[in-house]
Amino acid sequence: MKPEPTKQDDLRKTVNRLKRAQGQLAAVISAVESGADCRAVVTQLAAVSSAIDRAGFTIISSAMKECLADQPGTDPDNTGGKKSLRVEELEKLFLALS
Image 1: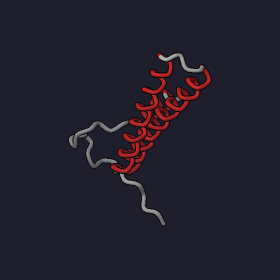
Image 2: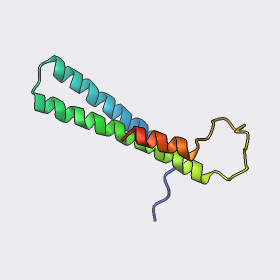
Image 3: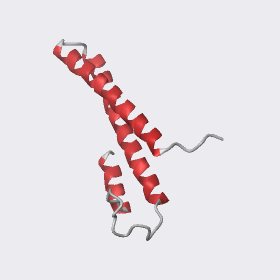
Image 4: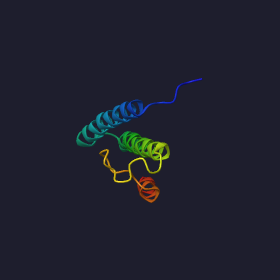
């Protein structure tokens, strides 16, 4: 059985996906500037869009896992640092990507 991915694993995968999208976007910009074929540009642009969407979903998924793992009442004042997200906020973020 595979171990559950950690938050660090999720973060590393998300950063890698965003860096790949950054490279793809640079290629799209270069293709547009050089007058590349429309089909090639749109195909590359779709790949960039998909990579960014997947990164966003991964970030939200990670936040949802954290919210589910939080024990009620352990830190009611959020003194541990980051403010936790409410379910409604997570839903709003999730829908912003669709």
